[in-house]
Image (cartoon, rainbow, N blue to C red):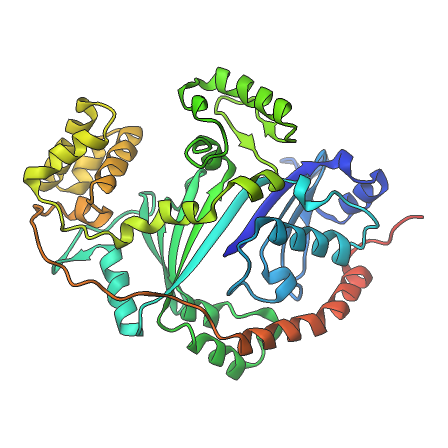
Length: 418
C-alpha cells in the first residue's frame, strides 16, 4: 500500500488570495542577533498543526509543498490503497477542500511527486518467529554476533518504546528502508481517534503481534536515478551524462505533453507528475528492490563460485575483484577496518554487487566463509487485517473530523480578509 506521499506544485496554480491566506496560517520563526534585537526577517516553517489534529506538512511560498499519509483522511495508515492517483486525490481534497475549505485548487493529477512511501506487511505466524527473524536480519547469524553497526552506516537498529526498527540508509537523501513490528508500533503510536481507549488500542494491536511492516521511502532523487529501470524514461537515457540527461528529459516532457519538472542542479533530478507515475510506475518494483534480498537463501553460494558470480553482474572485472577483495579484508581485519579503507562511493557499489549474488548485509559484515548449506524456509504470509477494528477507527475519525476542522478555523487559522 501507499503510505506517506509528498507533493509539490507551483503556487501560481492557486488563487492568489488563497495563497496569501495560507501563508498567514504558517508558523513564523524570527531570528535575533547577538544583542537580542529582533532581526527584520522570518522563516515560514509551514502550517502549524496542533497535536489534537492528525498532522500533515504544508509549506506555502512560490511553491506549495504538501506531505501526508492516509491517516489524515481515514484515521489510520494500517492498510490502504495501491492506487497513486486515488491516494494523492484523497490527500489533496482532504487538505485543501475539507481542512482549508478552498473553492478551487489544482487537481492531484497535476501535482509533482517528491516522495513515495510504499509499505508491505508480512505475517510470520507468531511473535517468537518474528523476533527470531528480526535478530537474523539485524545480523545474528549462525550463532555468531557481528560487530555493532554505527547509525551512520546503511543498517542501523533503533529502539522506540516497546518497538524496534531496522533501518537501511537511515540518513540517505535517496532512499530509506524500515522494518518494524507493527503491533508494538500501534501500542506506542495508536490512531489519534482511539488513543484514549486503551482496550480498543490493545485489541487493534493484538492483530499485528506477529506482523512485520516493511516500508520503503523513495525520494525524487532516487526515482530520477532509476527512472530508466522503472520504465519512466526510454532506455536511451541510460547512456546520457548529466547535462545531456537534463536537456533530453525536458524535450521528452515537452514532446510527450507531460507537465514534469527537471532541476538545473548538478544531479539529474526529475519530478514526475502524479498522473504519469500512476500510469507508468509499478509500486511493487519499489518495494521488492529494497527488501527482496531479506528473503534470499543467502547460504546457497560458496566461495569457489562467488567470484564467477560477481563477474556476471559487475560492469568490469576490476569492480568484481574489488568486491571479492573487500569480503576477504573483512575476514582478515574485520568489517570496521575494511569499511574504513574503502571510499563511501566504492562501498555502496560493492554492497550492491554482493547483495546481487546472494551475500546479505549480515554475511558481508560477519565475514564467515560461504558454504553450501541446506536452509529450512520460514513460512511467511502476506497479512490482510480484519476490517471490523479498522472500520471502527474510520468511523470514530469521521465523527470527530468536522468538530476538529471547526476548531482549527476558530482557534488556529487566522480569519480570512474579505
